[in-house]
Structures are given as structure tokens and as C-alpha cells.
Length: 296
Image (cartoon, rainbow, N blue to C red; front, side, top):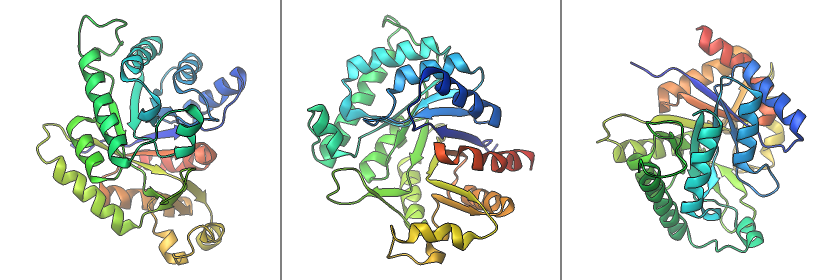
């Protein structure tokens, strides 16, 4: 049986308590299945923000999207995860990644390390969380007795292998870090490159008893009658791509409601994505697309 769609919104803009609660309620009203928060300096602290989101809502699950493992001690993180799951009534989804912004590590006085070192730290973090939270004697206990669902985000081979071994949800960014960027500037991967990455993940995951849910982070959603006009502001950031190539990018959804809905269905068919996350600026624009997909 194929998975039903799930949709998440990543709330990236800090806000006072009343405003934060209001936009979480708005996400719930629009039909989002998951309210997510990132883990970047200058944005909300993930766990208190999710506890506040739980107080403001009833239905959506609540996820970190994704924690920068390099900023966290695994033992202290286990306490945060268990406490947050308990305080949100078992609605937590834990998203983890290696972190990709050197400047944030420098500001925090923490080592950034090589890509290999960051993956090693993430692996140790995942294994320590499994050990601690899987121990019935561990305190505090998370509310979800079957375990807090784990999402891992990343595209490299070692990340995909780690994801295939441990994660309930495999998250693809559809972008790569620009070499040498201290601020984590990203460049999109093409549709063909994403084909290869998803295919590589499936190789690593071939022996799984239960297939993981596949997630894609969508950077921009524009519902419009003029797809090319929606693309033009992006061309200066990807000068090596044509208008047609930008329109094919998996992380950019543009067109009429019918066209965007067809794009999402085509991506499900091509890659297997059933769980899509949009960024906060696209929260309203994507809502009618969700309704159309669920009504089909």
C-alpha cells in the first residue's frame, strides 16, 4: 500500500509568544501535518519553540528540521528529546543533520571539522540516542513508547548509508553547499542529480524490513499563471541554468494550481517523495496544493 501524503512547514522567523502561537494555529488550520523548526543561530531555539507550538495546536506533529548535530552533546540531546516528546504529548519527530554553516560553529566556539568528521559525530549521536532512549531505565522517558521517529537529512554517500540504517524518514535537500562558503550558501541540484542520489539511497536501503518515508525540502512555491516570470528572479543566483532547467528543479514549484499539483505528483512517481516540507514564506501558497492532492 502506498503511503499517504504528509506535508510540513518549517517556521523560520522568530516571533513573540502570541504571534508564534498564532502562526502555529494557522499552519494547523491550513492542514499541515507537521510543524517544524530549523536549528540555526538567529532563529528560534528548537525545543522550546516546539513545546510552545504544541500548546497552541492539537493535531500536527512537531519536528526539528533539522538539528545541527555539531552543536549538540549526544547525552544532553537525549534529555532534550525525551523531555520535549513528553511535554508535547508524544508528537515529536527528531530531525538530525551534520550542520553545514561554518560561521555558526565559529560563533559558538565549536569545531566545524571536515565533512567526514561531521558525519562521524552525527553517527555517534544517532547511536547514543538509540542506546539511551531505548533503555527502559532511562529518565526522563519520552511519551512515544515505540520511539521518537528519526529523520536524517543529507545527500552524500555516507549520510545516505547512515540514513538507510537508522532513519524512519530519509530527507533530501535538493541542494548542495557551495564549496568554501562560511555561511552555508546552497546551490540546487538538478533533477537528474537528485535521481542519482535517491537511487543511491535505495541501494543502501535495499535490505530494510520497512521502507522509510521519503521527504523533500521545497525551497519556493509560487502559484501563478506565468511560470517563467516566477523563475526570472532566481536566474541571477543560478546563472549556469536556463529558464527551462530552473523550472525542472525539484525544489522549485511554480505554475497554476493544476501545474504545481501535477509537479508534486510527478515527483512522487519519479522519486518516491510522499512527505514534502515547505519554508514559512510558502506556507499560504502551498495550502491549496495540499487540498488538491488530498481531494484527488
